[in-house]
Amino acid sequence: METDVVLDMGWGRLVFGQTFADLSGVLAALRAEETGRRDICIYPRDPQVLVGLAPDELFIDPSYVYRLPLHRYRPREEVIRGVFVRTVTSAAEMGRINDLYAKAGMVVGDAATMWRNHRTRTFTYLVAEDRRTGAVIGTVTGVDHGLGFDDPDGGTSLWCLAVDPQDAPPGTGEALVRVLAERYIGRGRAYLDLSVMHDNAGAIALYRKLGFSRVSAVCVKRKNPINTPLFSPPPAGLAELNPYARIIADEALRRGIRVQVTDPEWGEIRLSLGGRSVLTRESLSEFTSAVAMSRCDDKRVTRRIVERAGVRVPRAVVVDGGDLAAARDLLAACGQLVVKPARGEQGKGITVGVRDDDGLARAVELAGQFCPDVLIEELVAGDDLRVVVIDHEVVAAALRRPAEVVGDGRQDVAALVQETSRRRERATGGESSIPLDDATAEVVADAGHRMGDVLPAGQRLRVRRTANLHTGGTIEDVTDRLHPEIGAAAVRASRAIGIPVTGIDFLVPDVAGPDAVFIEANERPGLANHEPQPTAARFVDLLFPETRRR
Image (cartoon, rainbow, N blue to C red; front, side, top):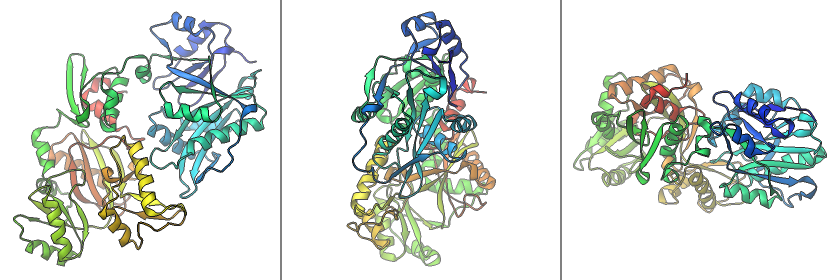
């Protein structure tokens, strides 16, 4: 067996403790950890002694090591529907793997290092494809200890199991683990090990189902900012925060900023560092003035301000007191309208695609339930684009699409809506779900279907009109494709409103082109779901610039 074995995984290094003759060598290896990486020492001899050598630097990871003796593995009797697991085939796919890591809150890796690793047999990178769409929705990495350092025990290990929380079909994680195990059985290896957090009940249940059992091995890590939540008690109430507040709290904790959860139900936290504190509610902080917030709150005011700044807005009228004459004139001129409360959020009371007088009256009545003043705009063709602007710089851009389902040839539309909604709820901590209501049924009917129809496998069906995330909308990062003129328009809007953190919404025919029509500005944009863009990091940079990573 080789000695002093350290393997670079791209996101950090694996330090195989059993290959070191002296614990001082293990300590030296861990001290060489690079900033922003997460090194892991597995199988250390006498881990309590190792930590005792540097208790201010090291800690025993609060995880379990599970082992699957490969001679006891039993294959699944039936195929896992909708999932195809294969080996990574290109360097570009390492970028998609990193996207999955980011969505799972894991440390992303250096794609070039990962690709170099994959070109050896020591490392195995697998991805799972959704058979309906062809999209990569899961990944796992395997390390062959025999090829890595002539391990006399014939061991292997599993790392970085990640599945897309929004799009992965049920059973994706199981399929990845099974294929990796079967690959190593084909090589004649003895066992497959993995490390799993002690409180990850879902993953532990899966591993036990597949035949894994706990062994006495442990992992040791450094007390770096990334690992802070693992060795330092979390603030009270942290687990109760929604994803939009939690992403900010986690980023602050990684930087050594004190986090006090003042109202978990409201998403309110206080961040403190060096005698200075800032109160935030998700991405809304004391840095946003009451004037800027009120400008965003009233869509009529927002329109006027950004239009004066040279940003294109749709034609519009305001209904006040029930007189629809001006609205009917606009309908005659435009053909289709959007009706929305002049004040409101989360897509409540909005009707898209009004085509006739009866529909207009109903839409105005609905909007009036949320605000007495109703804004009516021309329906502009294009995709819904959210541009996140922090400190008057574009940080992320994402296309937001209305909720849709993908047929599997077995379930009807109603069942697909319910299944997709459950996935959205799990992925967003309950913040997003698809209502199974008349509006959904109406959209399905407009597409020529009924809720009881069974869609062919792979067929996509849009089930909501608006792209609001709270009603099941999805988001696709397009930051790298954003046309500079659209980015510049978003910055002009943020400066005109005078707001340091905002989500500027446009309708665009092509995100890579210059054309865009302003829809609204959000004073409290959700910073989650924009992976791999560093939205939370840039927000904390704004609040505490002294902690910014150079």
